[in-house]
Every structure is written in structure tokens, then in C-alpha cells.
Image (tube, rainbow, N blue to C red; front, side, top):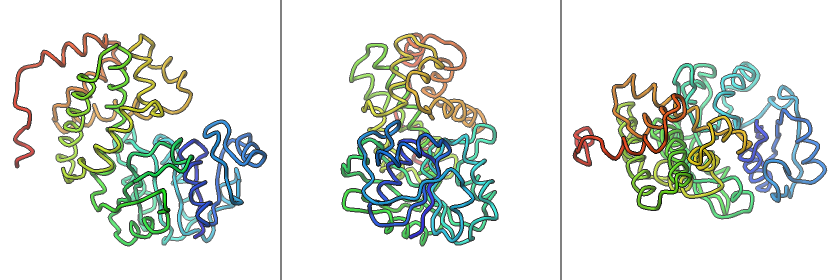
Length: 335
């Protein structure tokens, strides 16, 4: 297939490499020319994904318009905050049959829209696929077996991406619950931040297990109200992605959380991580959604207080632990 991929960070690089190694014609748009020069010279993205060598030739460019004609798939691998800009740039320049594949995870902060909703607004005729699940770029770049889920309202588009992106080390399932897949991918970053703070504060496995379990519960609560299938959160884009981001040092969100737990500000933590920490903005979006939908999300609320209101993380933990006693499962799940 003729595929254009937009975004030269670690995840975009890992997918560009995987698709190129499979034999697809890959046009890799990277805004930063120094990164392009590095890949041309060293056959790897030394800054964002060192050690992951490109085996086949790849078309590298910082001119997006030059790689939009006659493409089968357009892959978005930029931060959520940049997605609308990219989609606006390609509007009217690609075929209506071109499949849009999104790799980022989050909500647009200003509108609270999911990425699929932004794509539907701008490119209403193009099929959209969200590719999500437990997948560190560092491991995909080392050809470590990884499993994801492709979700779309267009079954044929999801199956096409499943077939064309799958390899012997990269297995893809399909799931028609686009709402659930996108919500799971976004909200797991919040819980990973909390898990990192847990470590930074010096707490242990008991508290982290509680955070992860109640975190998946919060994700499910919001998902149900927004129209998701609750079973989706038991899958790859829910509990699967949650496990990998809460337990691994590859996770930017967990690393940022550790630094915040150790006493650094949100800004200092993000600067030290050195790449976009999607969970920081997602906390604000999820907090707004919980208020809008009138859904109680105590972990999300606590994180919002810590990140945006300067609340002491230790006090936030105390507040969570001393909330009014209640049943584990609320009636909303049984209904």
C-alpha cells in the first residue's frame, strides 16, 4: 500500500519502520529537518527511537503536500492537540477512500471531542480507524511481540488495517466499539500518572493495584455514559493499555507522575521527561467531562487538584482513602 505517516516521534517512527519493513511504500512526514537528516544518515531516529534501524528505503520529507496524492492510508502520529491542524491541512488533498488511522490518545481540550469526532467533522467521507492498545514504541522498535486493536465504524476499514498492519510480531484484533476504544486509550494515561505518583510518594504494590483497579472502573463509568460497551474496557485498549502504562518506565505518563510524587511541579516533570505527556492535558479534559456528565470520578478529580490547583499529593491520597464507604460496583453497571 501507499501510506503517508505524519509525526516523527517515537511511536510514529516505530510504526513507520514496521510498515516499511513489511514492504509498504511509506512516506514519512517529519516537521523537524534535523530528525530527517539523522534518519537518512544513521537509518534510525537517534533522538526519539535509538537502536530501531530501518531495513528498507523510506521516503522522508518535511513537505506534507508532496506526499498526499494517491495514498491508501494516512496515519496520524502527532499529539492530540495538533490533530485538528493536520486534518485541516490535508482536507481536499486526499481521496475520500483514503483511510485515516490515528495513533494518538486523548481528547481535544477545547471541544472535549474524541479524535474520531474531529476527523468526522473535517473529513466526513473518509473512513477512520483508531489503533490502540498496550504498545510501547521502544518495544515495537525492537520487534518484541505486541498486540493492538483496530476500531472503526467502518468494518471494512478496520479489517483492511488489521490485514495490512499485522506482522509476525504485531498482531491486531478488531473492535467496532470506537467510543470505548478511544476513551480507554485516553483515560489510561490519567491512571498511569497516578500510578507514577504512587511510586514517587514511596507507596507500594497494594496502593498501585487499587489505583489500577479503581481506575479501570472510572474509565468504564464514563464510557458507559458516553455510549461505550463496558466489555471493551476489559480488553486491549482498556485493562491491557492500563497495565503497560502503569507498570513500565517506558511510559512517559508514569515517569512524569513519579517526578510529581517526588515534589516536582507539573511543568518541571514534563520538561524532564522530554516528550509530550498526554495524560496531563487529558486530566483536564476528563475532569471537564465528569462535570458535564455528572459522573463521580474521584481519581480524576484528585489528579486535577494536584496538577492544576496545587494540592498536596499526600493529602489527595488521604482524601481518596477516607471517602464515604460504598459498594464496589454501582447500579449503573447492572443497568
